[in-house]
Amino acid sequence: MNTLVVEKVVEQLKELPYELQWRVLEFTRALALTAPRGVPGKQLLRFAGAMPIGEVEVIRQAIEQGCERVDADGW
Image (cartoon, rainbow, N blue to C red):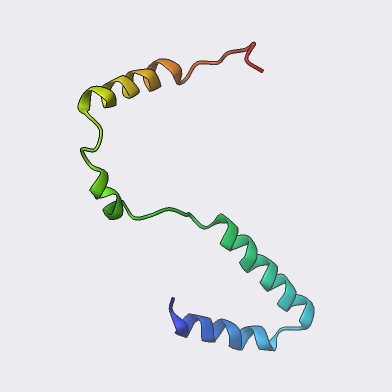
């Protein structure tokens, strides 16, 4: 986290009326909910090769066969 940015935001926030401070708080909460979550790919490298290539191929074929199809009676 860049503390310089946080400090500048706090400085500006202190100058705002109470109602606008609440709006900023709500906005930052909304941003936090939309932030991407996950792990860097580098952390997943340890799983490389964990599945036999035959199983990977079966999964790939199942995805290709099952995706992009609409089952109108499915709902």
